[in-house]
Amino acid sequence: MIRRFLPMTIVMIIIFLLSNTPGKDLPSAINGLDKLLHAIAYGTLAASCLYGLHPAARDKGSLLTGMAVIFFCFFYGLTDEFHQSFIPGRSPSGLDIAADTSGAALTVLLWHWWRTRRRFSGRGKTMGLG
Image 1 (cartoon, one colour):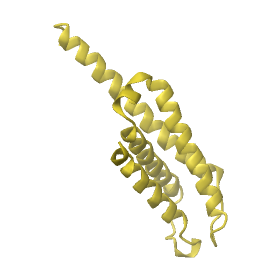
Image 2 (image 1 turned 180 degrees about the vertical axis):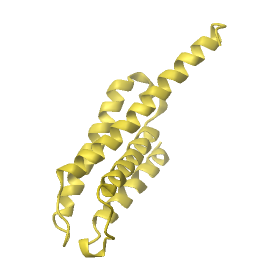
Image 3 (image 1 turned 90 degrees about the vertical axis):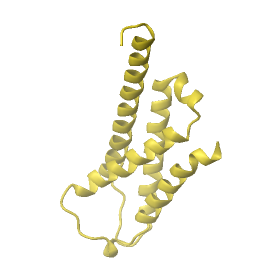
Image 4 (image 1 turned 30 degrees about the horizontal axis):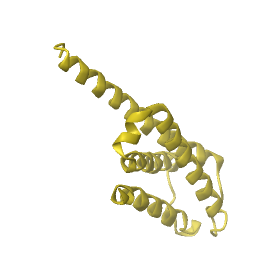
């Protein structure tokens, strides 16, 4: 079970290390590209969180599970922005938190859609409809 959380831990460490980089050491980004990168990073965090959960826990209630994962990613993004306030040349940003949460939410929505589609198509095949 603990091994399932290893990818999540690695993603969290990578996000922390990237946030720990002083502003002067960051490459200048195309306007808005940093928000896309935030969304991708936190979408990856959400996917690794979902992977870390035991399959029985994921299958019990996908809405509650998805909301918990989105909240976890939001909270980690919030603490990450707070952490950045102590790094020279960096400052917290509400838009970054919005991008983080959006990336996590999109990943959870895709997971829920895939899970629902797979479950529905599985039932159709067992009922002779597939």
